[in-house]
Amino acid sequence: MRKSNPQGYANLLNRVMESSEQMGEEVDPHFQDFKKTLALKGIDSLSDRDLHEIVTIFKKAVDLYKQNVETLKKAKPPVQILGRHKQLTSAYETYAQDCELMLTSIDEANKKIDSEQFSKVEQAQDKDMDAVSKAFDRIMAMMMG
Image (cartoon, rainbow, N blue to C red; front, side):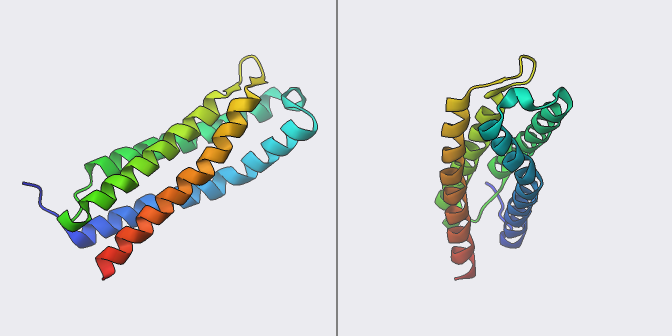
């Protein structure tokens, strides 16, 4: 039987959410510049170095998000929160997968992008993170109440 530590669980969730937020803040300027460049000039206008930097930061984010998924899967939530925890884990995993799809839409070697996939996944990520935030907020409200 799994032993749960509610405070430890809450701390773990906070660490996952904080690391995600920090990564988002690190990635966003690169993402915004990349989107702007794609819209105005196209991917060919990026130097190989700039494109590599963008792909590298996106990969760093995807790696963190995958690591966070594993952390959530291994977490031991209090029994009354188990269902909400599964919702959070599922939403976060979907977010991580969509971030990876965004990364794979960029073909660094051939300096090409699948614009349709990139755009579709960008929209999905917004919905994904909204679902993650709502699930997190519900869990925290349940733990406080």
